[in-house]
Image 1 (cartoon, rainbow, N blue to C red):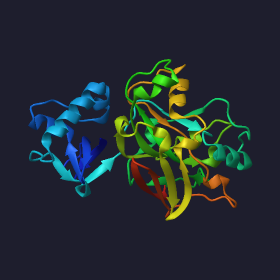
Image 2 (cartoon, helix red, strand yellow):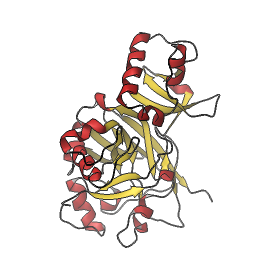
Image 3 (cartoon, helix red, strand yellow):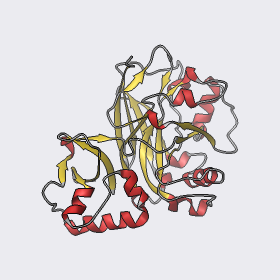
Image 4 (spheres, one colour):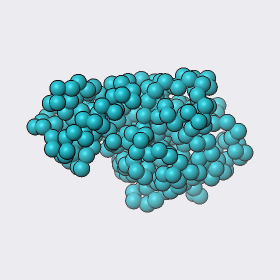
Length: 305
């Protein structure tokens, strides 16, 4: 399933939906029309665990492509929000997780040229999340080096504490797309959270594809363009630390809870690694895609006061 958080044109409340053949099906309303109760938020559905997803799949199968009045809206008539508009916790970011990106970062940033022996972990606060189409803010008073990074995002579905690599993927709810926006000149004594955690620095969406649709997350192409020019293209098989390794490593010391998000790192092609270096400026448009998941498109604008 492709699950979304959306807002219709006639009401302000965010709703949980399923994408199906160009339609957004409202999960709670579909349930009510069939005398069943379902949550109306993504986190609510995640909290129900595998049984909640299984019940939703059964309900969708029973419809046969015909839906009760008031349940289905054309995708063009709704606004997609970030799948989890306000995460409960900081996003777990993974740095230097593609071999070529390690090399390009060592040339221009204060990072080591040797491959990391363990995942490099940082965080992005919930306040930096924005949904599809929402502008990325360029704050010229703070940065002149705004950069892009396309990443596969992993959403945790069930609590993972000290899990093995073999069992790690069983804790995944699904996958999405994230752009890890970075102000390269805002790193402080090797700390990255201010550089990567400013408002609008985590574009996220357009949906969450449930894990059953992507049994192997290490076979996905991902790419990014700026103003229609391709800047990044790779495949998740080139991750230095695979998704199962990341979950096992994080959960060894930090309990991963339902709804937690891991941004799994970016391949080569970032602006800081180019010769000459390239940066994002107001008027630019960034488009990021992960195969089998989706695409998000974001303009860059001047930061509001």
